[in-house]
Amino acid sequence: MGTKRHFRVWRGDQQGGEIEDYDVEVNEGEVVLDIIHRLQATQTPDLACRWNCKAGKCGSCSMEINGKPKLGCMTRMSTFEEDETVTITPLRAFPVIRDLVTDVSFNYEKARETPAFAPPEGVAPGQYRMQQVDVERSQEFRKCIECYLCQNTCHVVRDHEENKAAFAGPRFFIRAAELDMHPLDAREDRKEYAQAHQGLGYCNITKCCTEVCPEHIKITDNAIIPMKERVVDRRYDPLVWLGRKIFRRDELEHAGSGRGGESMAPSTSTGVTGVAAGTPYSSARGPEAPAVRDDGRMDVAELLLPQQGGPSPFGDDQEFPLPPGGLVYNHPSPDKDEADPH
Ligand code: SF4
Ligand code: SF4
Ligand code: FES
Image (cartoon, rainbow, N blue to C red):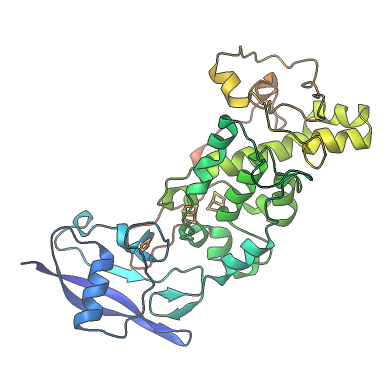
């Protein structure tokens, strides 16, 4: 026999609504989605809620529980105190359709705008060959279940509807990063695309998206920051600037983007594995950029190059990471009914 617990659930539609109170039975082992189903079965048959798998894999049951973006089916009732009121509200960044169901079509529009994977000309499905290291690099991003909790949490659109047109959001940054790391993607330079068309520059790497991802994808550390660093490298690094002066434009396009040639070949980059294998690291800036290979591409060399230890373009007195006192960022508070993570 379960115990009666107190719940508050937002009820309403586009015209408005309010939080309503319910006392619902809770049994051992149940999750928040079980409580919503019991509410539907016993008290509010018209309560709207989206769900499918009840296993954390379809990404449908996204909601805000005590102000935190979560999956209803993966939030155990045992994580709350016995006498704690559990408040369930719809995702805040998207327009409400009814009760806990929101219109997430913003995300589908951004997905449609993202250029699809395109293999090099002449390479047909079935002929794709990738090295295991390249598979592993992007595997993390393929775990995305498209719950859009990260999109809902990102302050760039959560509180700024006007930014939606120019900002694709963290879910689509990991898509860009995944394709950027794909050795057979020949369509275009994904990080430059992310910067120019997906609003990568709006992101100030607060990592809120990473915090809420139920698949534990390191969105900021493994996708956003590497893309930002490479965009900055390309635009402001003196070696790259020098390379642009030395190489012909056609060579640059080939070498700089690593995309779009008939010579597109599976990557043999040593990148991260080179460092892991013990490639010596020096803080002295190297005299030359990495060699351009016969196929016109450059090795992924960010971690091999000593330039990461070079002088900061922000001056010698700049401290990184930035001191916390300079950041204005509030984590969601469980004490607030409609806590704002920013
Ligand atoms: S790090 Fe912060 S600003 Fe950047 S996409 Fe994630 S939530 Fe948005
Ligand atoms: S990246 Fe994580 S939080 Fe964002 S949509 Fe994918 S699974 Fe959900
Ligand atoms: S119901 Fe599928 S993720 Fe929750």
